[in-house]
Image (cartoon, rainbow, N blue to C red; front, side):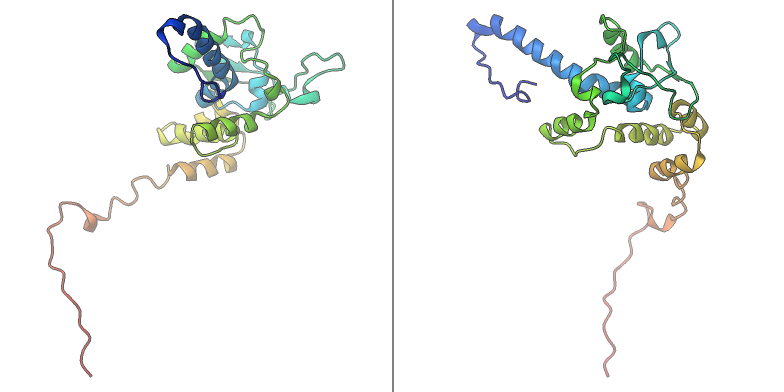
Length: 220
């Protein structure tokens, strides 16, 4: 995180007491900037507008459930004439419930302690729809391939499918209504073709070795 912000700290024991608060502050800013958004998407598959409209009263920590009931667009489209948050129905216009996994619950415990009514921090760049730009910049700095913010949702879907979760449940949790959209993710996850090459017994490792003969052309 220190490298990310271009700051150099001299780890002198005499100055350590002054440097620690700076390091903690930088780590906190970085967590709020990227980590919380990425972590929630990876465990829920929620769309960007759904994350923006997620309020704390839609998170049931006792029963480990998230209720996806509304969305908030980025920029001026997500505000009314007075500048207050303006909500719309979900993309599929169907409310849904997402189970909270154990790793996600630990993250939500931290996010639920803030004074804001919304689960995720209301960062200016995110509210203006620049989440992909921020994510790509973060990935460049840690030498990882750049992806769009929406790709996190796609990776969540393919991972769920590859782990054996039936497509009907992935569609229900992720908010997809059309099977033709899900078919694309099924192909990417290799669900339908998994194990279909096991019949190629001729390529088994324990096959007895054979002598390789050199082929020579027949003299004219």
